[in-house]
Image (cartoon, rainbow, N blue to C red; front, side, top):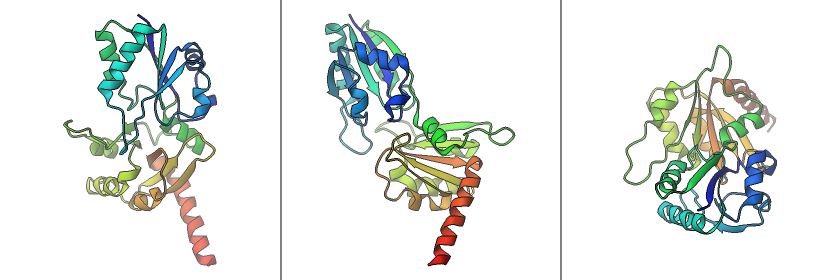
Length: 248
C-alpha cells in the first residue's frame, strides 16, 4: 500500500510552493489535481496527471469518486499526490479524504500550502492583524452543501476584527445585505483580491455597501477581506475615484 500526500499548491504562483510540496510532486507516481492548479506546478511532476476539478457553481467531480480513485491509486502506486489549491486544511474537504483513506488502511501525510488569505495580505502589503486594533481573524465561506447544517459565517464575520470570505464573489449582493442586516457597519472597509499571487491578479478597495460593485467582473478565484486594517487603502481608493470623477 502506497502513501497519499495531500499537498497544498498554494494560491497559484509556483514559487510559493513549499520545498516539501515540490519534493512530493517530484516523487509522485500519479497526481490528482484541482481544476485551478497552474500548469507550471503540474510540470514539477513526471507522474500521471488526473484532473479532479472542483469549481464553485460549475461541474465538479463527486467527492466519493475522488476518495475511491485515491484508494485505488494507493493500492497500485508507492507515492500518490492529491494536489489542492491553497492549503488542504482550509476549505479543501481534506477531512473527508483523510478519514476515508485511514479507514482503508492507507497512510496519509498532509503538506501545508499558502492559503489565499495570506497570499492576498502579502500582495496588498496589509497585515490581517494589527497591534491594539485587530487581534482576531476569521476565515469563512457562505457556501453550504446540500443537506448540510446552516452556517454561522455571518455571526463569525461580525464578531471578528478582520475576516476573509472565501468563495463569495458570486454572492456579493447577499453577503453585503446579510452582514449589514446583522449589524456590521455599511462603511466597513473592504478589499477584494482576484488571483492572489498571480500576474493577472486584480484588487479593489471600498466599503461593504459597495461590495457588489467591487466584485463585478471578477471571474477568477476571488477573496473578500473586511476590517479596519483596510481603512487607509479604502480611503485612498475613494479619494482616487473622487479625483477622477471631478476631472471628468
